[in-house]
Length: 316
Image (cartoon, rainbow, N blue to C red; front, side, top):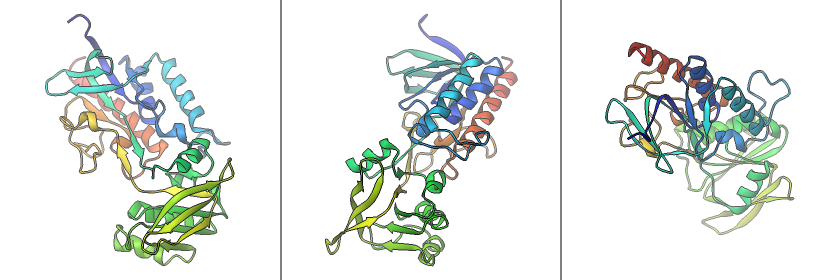
């Protein structure tokens, strides 16, 4: 039994939510331990330029910002570890978690900051330009600004795809929306909004074959009409994918209440509390509406304060 590690606060996941929670928890003498997860730094590590986070007047790259947040958490003596939690047991008073190599942790409080992963089409050309940071994105609100006055393509058929297309239409010369079926999945009000926007062209029954580029950035998209088999090339400098996100919450599903998609449900709106006392959630694992670095950081702060109050009430 001696190899079980006992902690006041375990933070699962890194990124703006996890690191902010760590900063607050460490300053409250909770001696937090963070497991960084599969993608240390989270979705921001695939974001080239962050220009909408307050305090960076010249902007900052996503990876650089995560390095700074990590350094700030370490400054207050957060124990940051590589690796991830593969199993949990929240059935008793003690929150039990296991790492991928079988290390067992018993934590008084747990802050889940595992985030969500954007879904992509899975094309090699898409991945190439996503990795290069040269024109492929899953967040129009984050990256649309870089395509002002240019032509962009967005793939998707739901409310968020329509919302992002409409957002891009205010910045871009032209937005071409690719919808795989012959109708939107979006609500009528959102579908009508894009249909009535003059610089949005909607191509139904259309799928992407390849993202085209010059080796540095995107130059177009090769698409096919799945009814007529007709292929064509759409010139664009930005290729946006809005086909949904997958919250990284699978490991918690037996204990934590999730919605139908897998997002963690808040037990009490306005707090970070889950249905399990002592387990809190921050960031995109619960937020399917805003999904911004700044909102994730805010909920990280809330989770740490809620965890601190929980411990204080229990006399820790």
